[in-house]
Amino acid sequence: MATVSLLVFLEECIYIYKKVPANKKSLIVWVNGAAPAIGTMSCLGMWFPRSTMFTDMFSGCYFAIVVFKFLILMVEEVGGDEAFLKRAGKYKLKISTGPCCCCCCCLPDVAITRRSLFLLKLGSFQFAVLKTAFTIFSIVLYTNGNYDIKKVNAIWINSFVGVLTITGLWPVGITFIHLKNTLRTIKIIPKYAMYQLLLILTQLQTAIINILGSNGTIACSPPFPSSIRGYMMSQQLLIMEMFIITMVTRLLYRRQYDPLPEEQDANENTRMTDLTQSP
Image 1 (cartoon, rainbow, N blue to C red):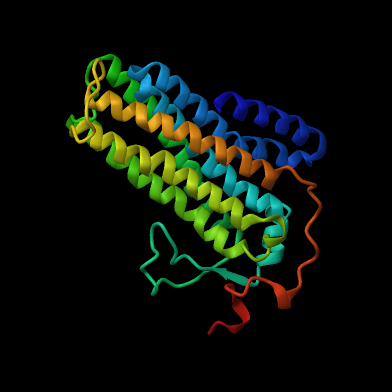
Image 2 (cartoon, rainbow, N blue to C red):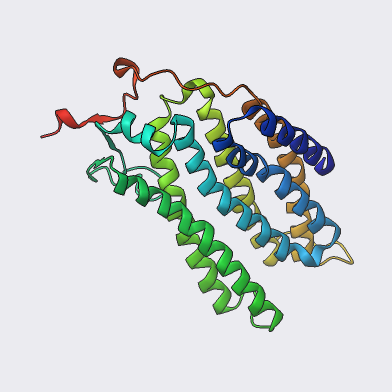
């Protein structure tokens, strides 16, 4: 499954570099490469169970970069920064959305300006950079014998990375809610669903199985202790799941990339708030 996923991805890369506009090529390749890359790392983790921590770290770093690339891709699908500001300049951003502020309905809408667009990009970019930096730092601690999931330093690092994850996903959610009707013709909703599914499977599912294995809930199977067997179960599940996601994303992204039609005010995103109606 991992091999087929890689072959499908390579075929898609050839198609993208031949058929897709230059400003979207690398973005689509990065986003499409998430499932094959994670599936390959899971395959290596299954073959070499003691390397699972490193394969999970690589998968986490790759996904952090994909979060930023997906945000930029949504903006580029509209036509880039200038086209985004031109289309959305008279609207406001709804920031009371998940995963950070979905319960804060009292938060005011924010005007769409170059500064707000820059802050959205910065919110996801910091996740990509700091996640990679903390991963390298964790590997350095591990080689020195100071990093263990149950130790205080690892708990602090993982907790901080969790906060970075939430703040990194928030701008993507804000941008998606703003553009989901505008980009409906290019199937942005199922694309976003695949992106969210990647998040759940690579972060939440893996964390739950690893915790169960560390606590001894998953039965041991000699010569593997409970924790290693939990890691192997997680990798086997991810290989199958990433194979399915690779096939679905191929259907979503392997298409003709025609420019979006001119904006029609009557059909624009109904969730946007017109500045002219604001007090």
